[in-house]
Amino acid sequence: MKKLILLIILWLICMNLFPQDSVTFGKYRKFTSTILGGEVTYLEHLPYGYEKSDKTYPVVFMMNGQNIAQFANDGATLDNLAGQRIPDMILIGISNTGVADTYWSCPNDSGQVQGGKTFCAFIKDELVPEIEKNYRTNGYRILAGQSNTGVFVMYNFLFYPEVFNAYSIASPMFGWCPDFFLNKTKSFLKDYPGLSKKLYISYGDLDYVQVLKPMNDFKEVLKEAPKNLLWKVDLIGNASHVPFSTLNNALLFFFSGCTMNAERRKLGVPEIKAHFETLSKEYGFTVNPKSGVLFDMAFDLGDEQKTDQAIELMKYLISLYPDSEVYYYFLGWFLQKNGDVVSAKKNYNNALIVNPDYDPAKAALKKLNN
Image (cartoon, helix red, strand yellow):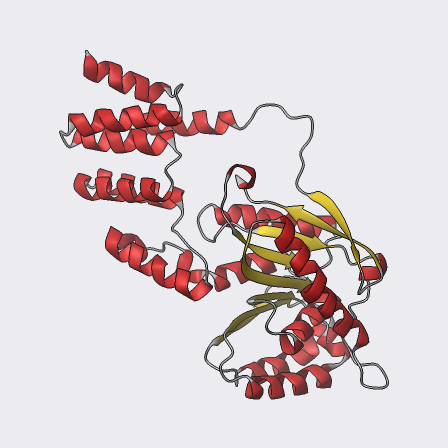
């Protein structure tokens, strides 16, 4: 049986390995900003299957999108985690060049933060509407920044908390104006006792002094945060400025409840449904367990000779992901194993409705009909 599963997995992989002329990881888009006074460029990276679905998605707005290595790293992070750990997401990389290079978020000599204030208005009044007009979004937004743009992300959190749900910051250079951010954070946390947001900050033990020196004081301030502000500050060992693991760690923190860990894998279908219904209410959009995880869980149950439970889990899996011939086939296989040949045939035929060329289902039906 395990050999058959391996062959099917290899077949699915090979279906996606036809030669390509090039590898495209994102596309450039442009629009004109009235607030910034010129053309702004951003990069898009869409989740797998976006074009063929009608789903809506959360959006990660990443600063410094002109840094292709950072953009590719963050896009790959979303793709990798979406397989088992987090919801599928859209990545938008804002190119902070030209008129968009105006996000400086420390006060000037007169105490004004003109750059940060203007750029926050641009994001709120122009960029977010632009993205929501052109993509299928669900209203859940994450803002990510690094170094100086990480300072901007913190400024946005403190002064425009209504725009984003969560914030990922790598190596913020608070040292440029430490008193400004410490004092504002103190007053902000007192002024918003009911604040419900998520904040993740990381920095390296080999980071710049402008990051390292103010961080301990900043962490002490965050300890006074209201209970619904979920925050974490990570010191990454053997890492320098802007640890590349930042978005990975942030997303696992923001969506920790989505992981089917060892304890959750012991739950029955009703308990799994209830857990994800609670998560969906928390996030404000539908969150489901990942298909591959449920599939693995079903086979673990089968290996433990818990066929009835495996069948129940496979039916739940298909109710969430009805477009896979593989899932119908293996539901049929479990049903056949359990002695329900009629239902097994029905699911083998369902597999062929999804994919008329699916050979394992053809072979199973042929064997049953002989």
